[in-house]
Each structure stands twice: as C-alpha cells, then as structure tokens.
Image (cartoon, rainbow, N blue to C red):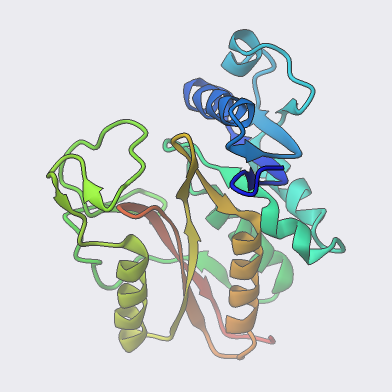
Length: 253
C-alpha cells in the first residue's frame, strides 16, 4: 500500500439521502484513486429504497443498514465493549450536516444506564459562547457558528476562509474549551467532550469512534463524585458546532 494512502477501518455514513450519497461516492472515488483504503462502508438509513441504493452501483465493501439511527448506534457501540481498543482508532463516523445531535443522545442514554438512580437530564446553558451565530433548539441543543454568512457546500474549512478571503482566526474546539471554563465558574462543569468532525478525504468529514468512547469515559469520570455535575458535549468542525449540557444529579456514583 502507498504510505500516503489513508487507512480506515469501518466507515459509518449517517443517512442514505443526498448527503450520504455524496459522501459515499466521494469515499469510493478516493479509494479508486489510491487516496484512502477502508474495510467497509456502512450507510445507515431507515428507508430500504434510499438514494444510495438507487444511485450507486453495488460494491462488495459497502452495505446499507436499514435501521433508525439511535438503535443502530446502540448496537454498533456495544460491539466495542469487549473488542480490541485499537479497532476504534481506525473506525470513523461521517455525520450528516442536518442530523440531530446523535452522539450526544447516545452518551445521554449511556449515562442513564450507568446511573439509574440519579437524575440525568439536558439542561440549558447559563452563559453564551460568544459566537456570531448562536441558536437554541427546543431540546436545549445549542447550534453555534463562527460564521455569520452562508458557507460553501462541502467546505473543508481551510486555514484561509473562502468566503472572507482571509485567514481563519477561530477554532470551534478552542471556543468550547473556553466556554466550559466559563460555565464551571457558575456551577461544576466538566469536559468538554469534543467530537471533532474534520476533513478526511475528498470533502468528506469524519470523527473517530475512539473520540466517542473517550467522551463516554469523561462522563463516567465526572459522575464519580456523589455531587451534581454538568458535562459539555459538542460535535464540532472548525467553524460550527452542536452543543448540549448533560446534567448528572447527586447520588451514588
């Protein structure tokens, strides 16, 4: 194998619609051109007749999994309980820009399983992140962005922003770190749990399975105290993010 070829394990593409079809096609094109190699692609969609099925030719290394996202993720991550930790390092998830905050929802369910006798809830933020765009959904998910303009479709977020044609002086991960410290001054807040979606190849952004499992360990460690604590959980790119505050109430750790 070419040493410059990126090596991945399982690639999970969330959604088999227009975005999932684009990402899957890009990955397969990148593989044909020797830019990436992977064990398999799993495209997850509830519709057995989703766009991926209709538009892409069959591929022995691609499988469409007909399932709702939450149920799939519960089963998918359960397989890592007793597996080799190294496998999680090369397995990645390709999120859709329009999907709900799925990884937070999985971490939330994990926390409820871990502490059935404690209050596990999603709470609103007591401070603002200070980003140009900042909107709160009814479920308390905070959608934030350092851009107050319309970004190009499938932007890879280079060091020089293609819209303002100037160096990109922001990094959403750093914003989340600062925000966590600010929140901690108001009430005990741990984290941040950061799932960083970064450009991987051919305009496809991914975050690692290892990062999700590490986030689960951060939450487990935060709850070792019998006191209540919040944990900031964010799925971010360089410019944008979806953020929640997970509350673990007082009780037996």
